[in-house]
Amino acid sequence: MRTWFRETIARNFVTPSLRANAFATTGVSPWVSIGGGVGRFWLATRIWREESQRGSTSGVFQLGIGLDVKLWRSLKVRGEVRDFWSGTPTLGVDTGKRRQHNFNVGGGVVWQIRKTVGLSADPRR
Image (cartoon, rainbow, N blue to C red; front, side, top):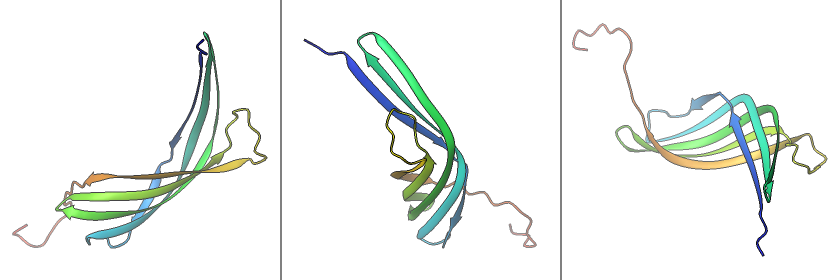
């Protein structure tokens, strides 16, 4: 006999941030970011043919650190860790806390597009 039960928990964070690079013109560039925004948690439960959804929204504070490593010209590899400090979701579990840390670890490839803007006294530019 099959049991038709499915539960999905999801979260989304939108946190515009400021980022500061150290040694931005070198081959290895560490950086930090700080920002704030909004986060949304939701739970979808399906039992047989009945489906229910509930969720919560809260303010989010974001801190992040990362490292960019230059591979070739404008191609870089990036690794990062971010902490999204948010309110606790209303998912039917009482942790006794009002806020929680949500850590994300990620990586990827960055293709940096550079455009020089400004005036120069050098006529060859």
